Length: 171
Image (tube, rainbow, N blue to C red):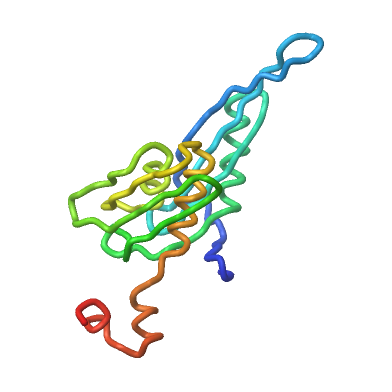
C-alpha cells in the first residue's frame, strides 16, 4: 500500500530503531524548573524502508516510546541496489542540506551524526554522505529522508524511456 510519497505501512516485526538525539528541556515555572525530554528516533527494516519520529515526555523511556510510535507512522521506501543508492542525490529540509553519493562495495557508510543513523537503519551499507548547512539533528534527519525519498529506481527509468539497463548506464 503506497501513495505518491512512497509511504508504506509498518509491519512491526522486522523494524529496528535507533535513537538519534535526546534533549533535556527545562521549563521555568513559579514553583521552579520542570524538566522534560525530547527524543528523535529513526526506525527502518534495513532494506529500503525508513521513518523518523519526535517524542516528548517527562521521562526518557516514555519520550523514546512516543518517538518510535511516531516514526512507524512516517515510514517511506526507496530503491536500494547492492547495498548502496542508485545515483547521487541531494536532500533538503529547512536549513539542513545533505548530499549522498553511491559508493563501491566495502566503502561503508561515510557520513556523520544524524545522517549516519538514518542511512544505517535504512540498510544502506556503502555510501558517501556530506551534511551541509544546519547541523540540527531534526533538519539533518528530515533532509536525509527527503533525499532518499527522491531517489529513482533505474529499472523504472529504463522502462519509462523504453531502453535497456545497459543503454541507460553505458550510453
